[in-house]
Length: 117
Image (tube, rainbow, N blue to C red):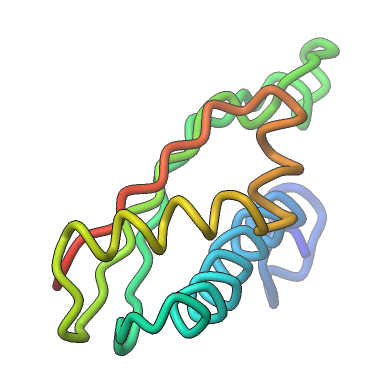
C-alpha cells in the first residue's frame, strides 16, 4: 500500500517496506536453520534494519539504478551463543539467505551484524 499523500489507503506497508521486511524475515528463518545445522543455540532473534534508500526513483524525479543503496541489519540473539558462535551463524546465513543474495547482487551494500542480546 501507499500513504494517503501518494494515493494509497495507508492500510499496509509500502512495496519498498515489504522488500526490506522480506530481507529481515529471510535472515531470521535462514539464520535459525543455519544455527541448528551448526548445533548453536541462538534463542530468539530481534532484528533492526536501517536503510539508505534513494527516493528519486519512486518520486519519479529521475530513473535510478540502485534504490536500496545500503542496508544494515543488527541481529540480536537472546540465546547462550557467544559473539564468536554468532559470527559463524552469520557467515553461514550469508551463504544461504536468498534475499541477502538478491540485495547484494543488485549492488546494495548489505551489512549484517550478529551480536548477543
